Amino acid sequence: MSPAKHPQRPGGRSARVRDAVYTAVGQLMGEGRPDRLTIPMVAQRAEVNPTSVYRRWGDIDTLLEEVSVAALTREGDEPPDTGSISGDLTQWAQIIVDDITRPQRTRYLRAMVSAREAVESCPCWEQRRGQAKDMLARGIERGEVAPTEHQVLDHVIAPLYHHVVFGLPTDRAYAERLVGDVLAMARPADKA
Amino acid sequence: MSPAKHPQRPGGRSARVRDAVYTAVGQLMGEGRPDRLTIPMVAQRAEVNPTSVYRRWGDIDTLLEEVSVAALTREGDEPPDTGSISGDLTQWAQIIVDDITRPQRTRYLRAMVSAREAVESCPCWEQRRGQAKDMLARGIERGEVAPTEHQVLDHVIAPLYHHVVFGLPTDRAYAERLVGDVLAMARPADKA
Image 1 (cartoon, chains in turn purple, red):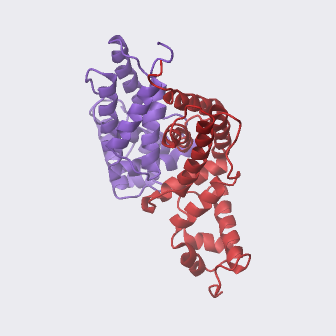
Image 2 (spheres, each protein chain N blue to C red):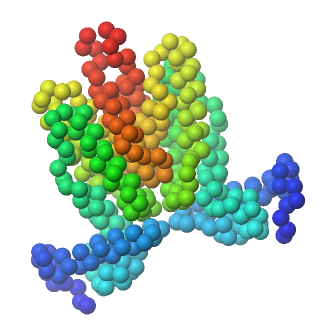
Image 3 (cartoon, rainbow over the protein chains, first blue to last red):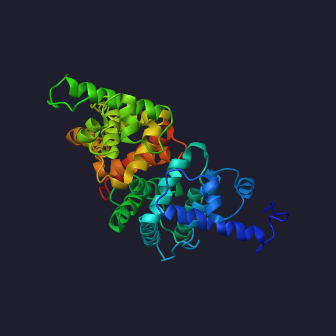
């Protein structure tokens, strides 16, 4: 197999390689092999030439990152729109809990942690930040008092992921408590 | 080597085995082998019989857990006592940041995440919870408005560990921001 001449051609060989590689990563993860995936392992399972994988992704961390982002954002890019920040954040946090507590997703996240040495930034948090920003901006337009998007990431997203990767209890009630806390943070300090 | 007849005798063979095993775990971690330590690997490095290690700790997760707790609490069990909750939490969070951002400690934490499948509870959070409880109780005695210890764990400790294990930026300024947020949560809602 020689490397593709037109790697950007949509729906062509390039897309087929990507699908095969994503599927292979998902399968290997699903089989509970989060310890240290390698590009040759993935290439073999995907039945593609390792050289193609190296050329396109460079290293296993970049590949895992990309697959994780794709997986983490699969539920749809649009955050809830319930008419209140409280409702939006609660529903959003519950979607995230349901998602990241699935055993296969938890394995993904732990594999991301193992792969972390080399990776600098994490697009999945950027994705979450964008969603938080949208929900908060809508609330502010409606005249609601809102926490910042950083507060939402630090005090809702971070504890949820922390609990999941360290195997601490994580459920919808916990998510609701975190949302309550971050909303309490946003109370205007000296309006009275 | 036959197993010790008096495993609880303090300062005796039992303590020597523990020290050798802890040191071996620390060395292997320090050499950057967080992927999947095994009891035979640790026993070989510690020059003790694997059977003794299995008998005492049962499995590698329990051993890693115990070593981590010992490591995480090494700075001394007493949390800061500066005269205010704000001062205590800020100093405490900074000690934790300085500690968990050291490369060797970060590797420990990532190894704990990898080892997590089997472990149910995590004594290190219990340790942190106890310290938080002490600091908050002193503040309440002084008449300060205090967040709960769960809020401190969820909104200071969890984001710090989350940032470290996922390789996101973690420094004292970030810790200070988290402490500010958790104190804002504790503002009395309708005192005005």
